[in-house]
Amino acid sequence: MRLSQSLVAATFLAAAFAGTGTMPASAQPVTDYRLDNGMQVVVIEDHRAPVVVQMVWYRAGAADEPWGKSGIAHFFEHLMFKATDDMAAGEFSEVVAANGGSDNAFTSQDYTAYYQRIAADRLELMMRMEADRMRDLLLTEEDIATERDVVLEERALRTDTNPNALAREQMRATLFMNHPYRVPVIGWRHEVEALGRADALAFYRRFYAPDNAVLVVAGDVQPEEVLALAQKYYGVLEPTGDLSARVRPAEPEHLAERRMIYSDPRVSQPYLRRSYLAPERNAGDQKEAAALVYLAELLGGSGATSALGRALQFDRQLAVYTAAGYAAVSYDPDSFSLVVVPVPGVSLQEAEDAMDQVIADFLADGVDPAQFDRIKMQIRAQEIYALDDVQDTAQRYGEALTSGLTIADVETWPDVLQAVTPEDVLAAARALFDKRRSVTAWVTNEENKEPAQ
Image 1 (tube, rainbow, N blue to C red):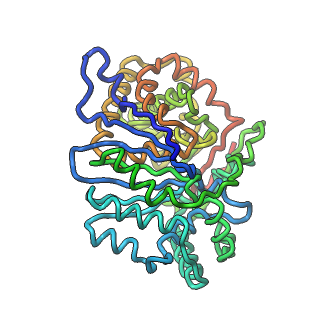
Image 2: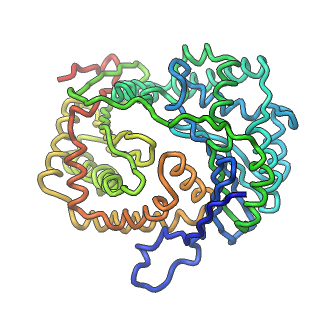
Image 3: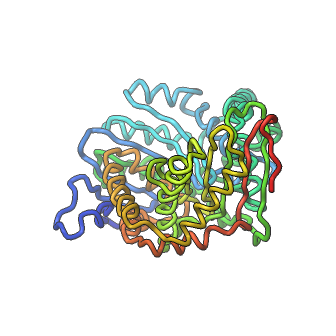
């Protein structure tokens, strides 16, 4: 049996405790293995409670779907709870609940993940069931029809009846001209309606295999025992073996600013949103992404203290809400967004002009040292609090490893964050704020519809 093992002490708080001579008692050791069939196994020890979280992450998300088959990754997430050669449909979750645990799954652009949180002495049972459905799922035409209807209803409830969700969907389709991030995770309705059993089986056979998966086990476990169980249940599964490189269509150079108006009578409060193409965290090079984390906090992290909040909500009283957000973890470049909800009587054009002025002032005046220090301390505290939840820790590793990052990147991320300087933030802001790489959306209703300038 070939193993690639590296035992490294988790360093989430290294920067926070630099110079103190001590590390927090809750810093978790992380062990990394590779099974012969290609499956990566990551074990995160946390012995504070007799609980374990098992997560299986597949390097297959909405951005990996075949063209014209949007929604198949999320659709298949639903199908994974159907029957296998050993278990009846729905039995998986019933067994988890009967043993006092909880389970669920989720799909993103870059991955699909399945997890169980349960007493540590039930880990072997969870592995046996999860390994069973990795390769031995049975799908009938009835399964396909039933779950397709469930997904369509989910889309109806979460997207089609939600004007804000529809506006975001239209924005992403406008921001990304060529990259599959432009396609919604839940899929376009007309394509989901056409998904069939052959589509599901093709997706399953291509992506659901040990060599395309990462097993993350976190909690009250010993690495050697987890490895033995992983070899017993996952190590015997055949790999796909012919997985092609994970290469997606790239974005071309963006040459023109894009604008859109989404008008819907269900919009109760008009607002504007702007999204810019933004770099992601990259393996061995996370500095710019860390600076953008600070930028989002400085511009829109808090209505009371951020640049947008102070200027538009308090000083000029033009807005009832402002925010900024940044998607740092993704396999390919994603987005950085700004939101302004103006007070009644303030037009979207006035709100946009005011937002642009705040950005211009920020670039001209630089970073407020007091605000920067406050955010640095806040980020350090967030890293400490994150260690309290074993599932959150497991998710950090799984999300990173299926998005092109490494264990070392996860462990050095807190240090990278603490090393950010105001100059780094300004440099990242200047590179980011190019309207040719953005889309600005006015979300309104018919009565308040305004022409874009």
